[in-house]
Length: 150
Image (tube, rainbow, N blue to C red):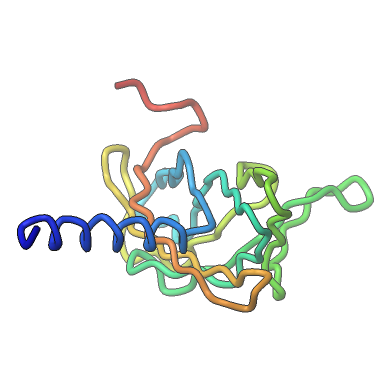
């Protein structure tokens, strides 16, 4: 019985940790830069939260400024703006952060990003229960929205 107790404790800790994670992030990627002069790019990902939450902040060591943005047509003109209050994730629905829509903007890039690089990004969400959840992503750099070939 003594040898089973540590294993059961480990399993219980893993289950509790999994139960605490309410948000899933799938298919993250960052668009590569086209020249060394380009100082901004976007992170794209699909987010889903079982209970509903709000994406409130993002951070990355690859950029001096990281903001949650929306692109939308306004009076026939495509405009981009920072979402000061974050981005709502309705309960059980997938929110697509993609080119031409919601995205995370990486501004004041520390260096050019090329295909094959990986960019660490931390997303902070506030759950409906008021608790913060932090997601750490390793986003591959790509030149387009096409899925990576394995």
